[in-house]
Length: 289
Image (cartoon, rainbow, N blue to C red; front, top):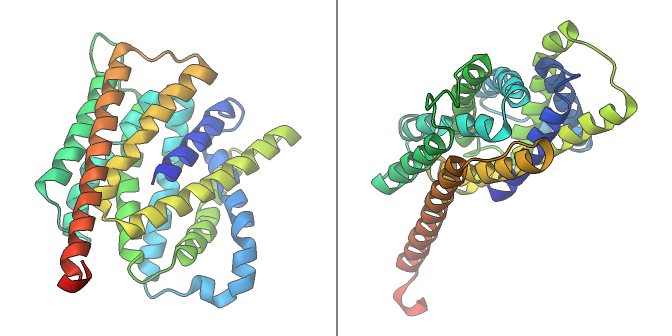
């Protein structure tokens, strides 16, 4: 999950850097096309096994919501400071916790709920929506809020799929369907990229594929509600990148919010490790402890 946060930050940096010349829908197409190229050797090697699924409906629904959510989030990352856009993207955690309990049937205790709420409170502390006009809710912000809701459904669907599907199968379905679904938006905003831009767009797609693989693996190894707070580390990376590359200077509220986010992430991570260790010890025969 931490590697997922790092690769996501690299991807959003390229999205913002290329945003002036390539609209969100077109960037989504290039991202999906590059990801398809990365996965093509796996598809050729495994052929039918790469598409083996007993849940095509969930695969299609997840790809549809993911593609629309991707276009909306790309638009928000292009138009907003990286830290603010990332902060709004964390609202999906508010949906992940109830969805994990209702759809995935995971046990969601008070500590997990508390960690998610505290982390989101740190996000609000950073952006302070409506405070002195520093953070106006416009179309980019609304786009990110809508994308967060869609991504919450894709994450929950992914958690269901990881019960009986490999990471490769999920990635292949996502790449193929995502590319097909991104074509209409690309046609409407099409332009041929310059050689350097093409290289950066391809890099964005490759990094995005690595990001998705890391995220799927993280969700596969841990409960959705427990993994969600770790994703908050993106906020720290976004603030640093925004400052270093785009002259987006973090305020004291940004730093304070980031501190709260990191604290909640470390707490839930250490707590999960402690619970897992206790579970292993209790499962071992008494003579082997």
